[in-house]
Image 1 (cartoon, rainbow, N blue to C red):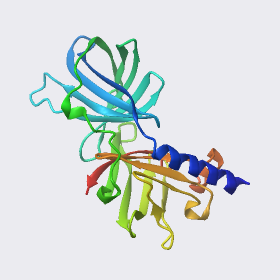
Image 2 (image 1 turned 45 degrees about the horizontal axis):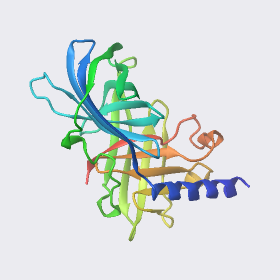
Image 3 (image 1 turned 60 degrees about the vertical axis):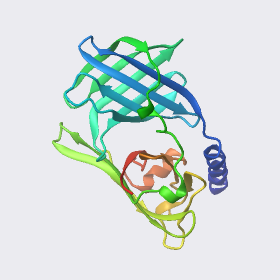
Length: 250
């Protein structure tokens, strides 16, 4: 029965992959606590993924920084990511209602928190477009990863996915994720992941009932568990492969 239910969940996920569309699109400018000038632009799709960019406009070199996370109705939760996969201390919790934005920006490196202030709507910048464009199977990267520094234990944590081709729209993978405890695994040699557009679902990894799905976009991929919490014991530490991984090698 469990495997039957997992198969149904996989079928639903494949259907969702073919029906992705943008449901939210916003751009604002303002400040953090009236001190730090910013510009913010982001979108979200109908499978709950949000992405865009934040720019600190008064810095010496104001370069947009990628932000990726989740959306729940009108609330958005996103981290900042650099091109090498580093997740900065910046975490954004935003709510948009009736075209007005409010929320907090939290720096986990120093535990400082700022409110978004004087935020006003602006035209959506070209540089923020296309973050959630489904990636073609022909452009899947070889390496995706993320990392962050935990000041409490003075150590780096993170995760990666490495892919290699296994035929048309098929890839083998090796993955690990260490947000604190470790989850790791790989595809079976005779059973690669099969892409449906920018998405695949892989079940019964490591000969246990853990299953996950992946969605690919031009700059990153998102991994999400599709099986029940009990299957996290596959890794023995209540962890999983879930997360945002930045494309660092094409």
